[in-house]
Image (cartoon, rainbow, N blue to C red; front, side, top):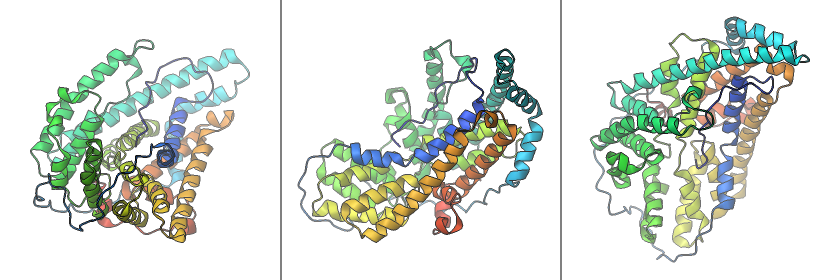
Length: 462
């Protein structure tokens, strides 16, 4: 998605109020999930409308963009992965959390009773922040260890996940920054990310695995350093990606964007036509949440430490959200001649029938209205979208705006962390929409189950 989700560097300062750092992060994570789909509507309203371009009104059903060689032998389908279980009910998880947070619990209780006396309150808040900072650092270390285990795997797709994660520019530790100047820390992080990025790109160049190639493409496109610093990145091509994954929409959407930038009208139309026919609209570079949870689950850790590790996992998942889906909306925002209308109708029908995530659902509704699909068909999905957004936003608001007593209430914080863990497990097992539908009442949340191949492909760690 076009909006950045990188967290600003955290600094250890004297807190201005009673709200703990972990609580602010929890509320922020849920708020991000609630606002993701708003990008599509912003794009539709704000994207510049291209000038009308005339194209001969002939679409061949099996047209292939010429630079793409014949598909290579398809990789064997990977076996389905056993679902992650929510190990304990929410009540038990909260009780375990309370038992493990006795020190913070006592500090919070003392702070809640000292709100009227600033001379007592401020030292207590400083101690609370110190304890939370230690948990935050331990959670970051737990996440980093999981990334290293994935990176060291002998299984090629799993290793690619680890390299992709290692290549992502992570938020800096407060200790890395001097005052407000974090330039040196950022530069160090870029240098640290360069080696796994180069290794991942080299791995993709020598592999016929489409998912490995997709991860390398995504990592190189999102890298903070110039491509010249990682020569292997400049050798990757959308044509090769499309050759490896001809039934996946993502490489064709990238090729359409490249054709548009080059002024190649026919190439753009042909690539979009192939994307419309593609049965697979998943984000091939995503699916990071599950392997990270699989790696961290067996490691003993205090609940707050585990929550911080899971927050890093969620940030990684959101950090590689599909950047190519809005290309379809931009394509269909142009004046619709017969070719473009045919392709956009195919795109809208495909995305509306089986959206892979909230972004696709939002885009599909906008495109369906654009091409004039039946109003009732669109209204059904609009009602679902509204319900999902309302449920997510309601949960985020509930957790983001506690009163002063609730902010210092360990029981409330533990219940929020347990609910967040359950939400992430559902996301890892069934995708974003399945996790959001679980927040709805049974009648409102009813929807076709995700197909086994799609669920397995978005969760590749074994």
